[in-house]
Each structure stands twice: as structure tokens, then as C-alpha cells.
Amino acid sequence: MPSAKGTLAVLRHALLAGVVIAAQALLAPSAVHAQASTRAEPVTGPGVVTIGNIATNAKVNLRAGPSTVFPVVGSLGYGTRVKKGLCIGGGSARWCEVETMDGKISGYVSGRFLVEGVRPPTDDDLAGGPDFWRVTGLAGNERLGVRLEPRSSSDVLATLRNGEIVRNLGCRMSGGARWCRIRSTVGMDVTGWVRGSYLRESAAPGGGGGGGSGPDFYVVRGLPAGDTLNVRTRPSTQGDVIARLSEGARVRNLGCEQSGQTRWCKIRSTGGVEVTGWVNGRYLREK
Image 1 (cartoon, rainbow, N blue to C red):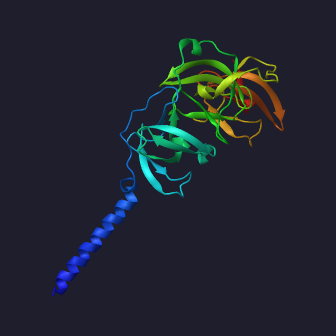
Image 2 (cartoon, one colour; image 1 turned 90 degrees about the vertical axis):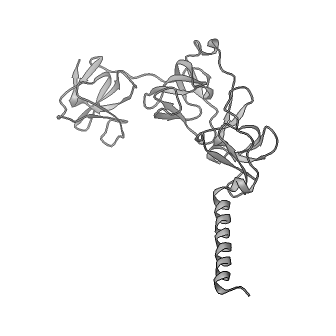
Image 3 (tube, one colour; image 1 turned 135 degrees about the vertical axis):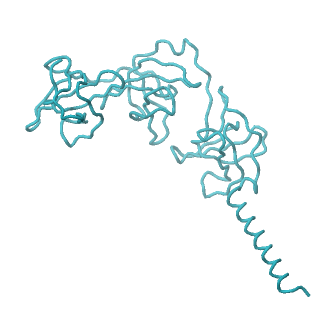
């Protein structure tokens, strides 16, 4: 008959084994279910779909249905090439049915992790182009980021909705994608780069431009030491601050108006990223 000490040792060993098994189920579900097929590097081309928008050493869960409530049936690493089937939903709720190229694993992944390749544009595709583009192809409530530089990691200056019309300032290839430099035509005047795959040729938007009396340019003067001049969305201290100007900054005059006891001037910044907004006219001097 085993001793009490021996019985305790057996129980301790069984308990430890149970803890290890439970931890494996939580941390590595793909080890319990089907494993991902051999990783492929991201490629670009018609009809090519790969797993992306994650770290190069990360994986995404493959589920039995189009929601996180369905069980995980496998995992797919960055760059894994897949065949895409039916997609359901839109925006962050978009799920797509996929299958690995070898047919060993199939299921659903969130659409934001799928990168679809296209034919690289030729020089003729990038040359010239229309005067205006229309934003199109965004899912649901998605917005198109206007970036400081032509790459996805660059800072977002503003966002655009489906249907908005922008001026075409030229396109170029960067990182295997077509990027176009644009200038907004309504609201805040912003110039930056957007993904060309969301742009289609458009007619010019309706409406007229700004302008006003006075000099063509002003210089910011009279600020307290170390202070900056707020650029606002409307001629009021209640308007959102969208930029700040330093002493000596040169701006284009788009016209001034009186609001209460304050003279407000609509200006456009010069150099770098263009920003249009309203500033307190007491800090502007004729160039």
C-alpha cells in the first residue's frame, strides 16, 4: 500500500500536468487545432491575397465562422498567401472566408488582416492624370487617411469620406503601392498623400474660392516671447485649434472680417504642409 507521502507526490504531479495543459490551451490554440501552412512572403499581383497589417512575427486567428464568438480552428502568419472567398459585413466588422493555397486550412479571418495585390502601375499610369479625383471604395464608415508622406506609417493630417472630391497634384509608386498627392477642395485646406487605389477620376467640384482685400501676404508679429498664434477652424475662440504659427511666420491673406470686438483673418500657411484657417488679426502685419 503506497505511503501518504507517495500519494501526495502523485497528486502534485497530476495537478502540475493539468496546469500545463490548460496553459497550452490558452496560449497556443493553434497547437490544439490545425497548424498554418508554410509561410510565404508578401507578393503583389492580380488576385494575390496575403495575411498582413500585423507584425512580421505575429499570427492571426482563423475561426470557424465570421465572428470572434466562433472557435479558433488555426492560425496564419504574416505573409501567408490565401485564397479569398465570400466576405461578410463592412469596416471593422468585415470577415472573409479564406483557404490556404495547399487547401489544408480554411475558415474566416477579419478583413483588416487581408492584403490584396494589384498590378503595379506603369509609368504611363502615373503620368498626368485628371485635375480632380473622387474618393471611392471605402467600406462602411471607414475614412481615407491623408498622410504627410507617401507611406502607411506616416502621420495622418486629415481623413476623407467616400464621395469627397480632391485636387490631383500627381502620383508616384512608394513601397509597392501607388500614392497620390492631393489637396482638399472643401472644409479645411489640407495637402498630403493618399492611397491611389481609393481614387477615381472626377469632374471639378462646384462652388467658388476665397479671397479678400488687403495684402497678398502677412507676417506674424507681436506675439509674447515663446508664444504661438492659434489657427482655428472658424473665426471664434470657440473654433478648434488646427495649427500654431510662430513669430515671423509668413501666411497668405484670404480675407478678414470683424466678429465682436475681434478682427479675424482667414489665412493659408506657406511652406511644408498647407493649412487654412482663422487667426486673430491683431498679430498680423503686412509683408
